Image 1 (cartoon, one colour):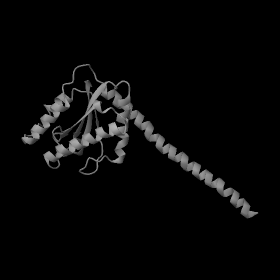
Image 2 (tube, one colour; image 1 turned 90 degrees about the horizontal axis):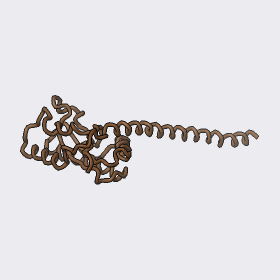
Image 3 (tube, rainbow, N blue to C red; image 1 turned 45 degrees about the horizontal axis):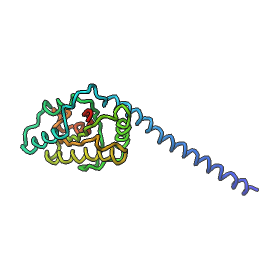
Image 4 (cartoon, rainbow, N blue to C red; image 1 turned 60 degrees about the horizontal axis):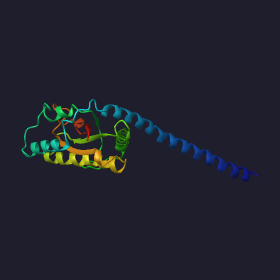
Length: 204
């Protein structure tokens, strides 16, 4: 008699435990989704072009500027007057994408951010626009290596948006800026300089 009672109760207890685990798992997945939706809304607002003016910056122009500066070993423009002044005119977002050390491999925790960017780019408000993705480093390490690494990382973000999240690749260009456009010129080794930026370069 006692054996039957124990046998009948065991599956019920197991079912309750499994249900609790399932609910906990659902809650864990639901929370990031809500956060991502909020991030996407912020990105939509920040990336909406303020005017219909033609873009003053193109990927080709930027790439030539930074490659020439690095090849000639020209001093960094600490006042950010040339490149940054033009970039600052554009609707933009700045995000911290985490990569494996000295690599263009995106760390898993950064895919939520890239997914939120993709949500924004899929929104009808931004459908017609094209975007420039730039990779940036701090001044730690070799200048030429930093330029190459930043290009690889910008390409990696673009590839993720296209291949994982279905963004039309014709809307995206990627350019590595290396250490040429520091966010904190007076503190060039500050990790905050290691960032990815997305610029709305208008209708094309």
